[in-house]
Length: 219
Image (spheres, rainbow, N blue to C red):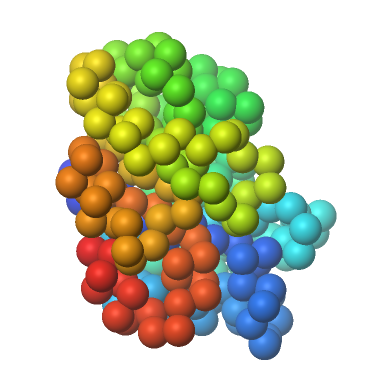
């Protein structure tokens, strides 16, 4: 695989064109500018999640081109580049990782297609799922959430709450875990203290007034 997965997921930035639609430029410029700033100030991983309204979802060629530019930018800064959900795209452009949700393509198919080529993250929303996949060596980390209510993702599950990560640890879940959903500079430290190996953010960075300062606090 690659460098230690815990250091990869430490500060995990997730974004697509829909998350930067409030900025002034083209979708591509908006995302690439924000990503470059975030890379410069110390994110440890970037996940390209371009989905839903205001995204390039229905323009696959344009979306692939942007994904490639994001990948190249990440490589410049030696930061792992992850694709959300789209296994074919991840393989085509040789992403470093793939992240899938419970309702995305069946995890076993994802493993069969990508194992050995990239690291794999899986979204977990309850204890049963965590226990089911804990011993699966092909899955490198769990994405846990949403921790708090969040406006970023329309179709998300109900929030699991701040103590869920502690509960997972007490129940013997040892796989590296990155938490997501409503995380910001005021609660990041607490979540790390409760057992999260990393934190994932979207709007905390896409809407930050001072990105450098925000990243420092999130780390």
